[in-house]
Picture 1: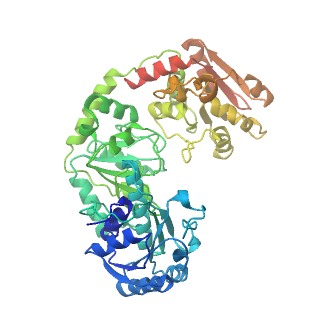
Picture 2: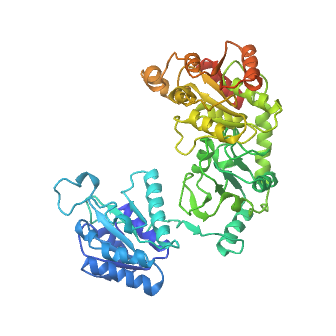
Picture 3: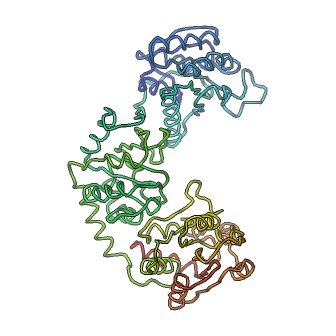
Length: 550
């Protein structure tokens, strides 16, 4: 029987799954659950050493002899600090070891309790990764703990082979052993610097080709024309989810279509069973929900540094490569039935959604703006930036070209300044579509004499943070208007006058809106131009539902 401590049994199972065979164990009571598990597990060879400093060097010797990282397990307190000389030696030799330390719960650190010190990060720069694996209380806690252990065990096996530290807080009771077997776990794999001849890469691509329900998800990234063409070629045979943050090709999924699919058929029927995820963040929440809710899906991520990211909570491997390089290797799946299901659903969705004129709203302003810039011929294509919150969500629905968005942290600050800076160096017309809070937060971006008429702003002002009002249950809070959605009465007229920018205004219905969009796109100016569209938040939400067909 194994310990009842879930973080201890999870760690034991993942050590085995990652091929760790040797564990040097030191005496102690706080680490007893860990030691018990390691000794009980027939796949691990345990070696008892009392002195922690010596034990860590034993682990180094085992690592050198086997070519596989060995672990050393110590109790709480100063026991951990005694491993530092061996940790440093192992890291500098590129023969990293795994230090596993038991710990008191965080509530007891610094409270004059025995054998306590701040253990997370105690080994400093001599480890390549330090993680704290709390006792899981929920499914999300369990996913988090699994991911952290996988991150550490992947790190110690990377080319640099740095030592790693896994800290395991354990609460009382410590000595209950009623778990009959270790949990089923998946050891996340890494393909390093892949090339077409890599056996591991061939296995991954073969699994993708044979999958019954394969899907490609493209997060924010820069893609070459060759990669975009290959995605277009793949799209009839495999569903490809990609937002304008990464470019645009025809026939791809968007988040509104995914929401419609889940509404019509449920997540289980429309979820993929194998996903290749390239690039960084995606804006849409429904594509994440679709994959996260699946119990039968394998996700492979790409990352240029080989770092493990798990936004869909089902990552089984990471490819250390550029998104471009992986996309161009993707084969056409053997079965295209899943893609045909999505194509049929897309046609049904297109028939239901509102494609003509919408009520006067932010959605109609963006639709008319995108229509106008596509029809207005210029020598160079304009660059279009979108601010965060509702603006970028409208851009993802309506833009048919690459859009620029600050989606690293997803904050609203700096959207105007980023687009303004872009306009100075790009040599092309630069537009920004932004909501009111983001615009006023960063209004000083217009305070720059270098800016000229190539910088233009479509300001969507519904006098609040409208996205907060769309969240389920938020309307039950008395703090919503004044404190959460930050209702206000500000306009951009005075700000534009202060910074010598052209100010245009549209309000009331679609006729002045169409004229304002025309002027924003076509008028001559030697200073920035701002079109402020004043809308009503309730109509904005109504129009968005029309646009999404939901």
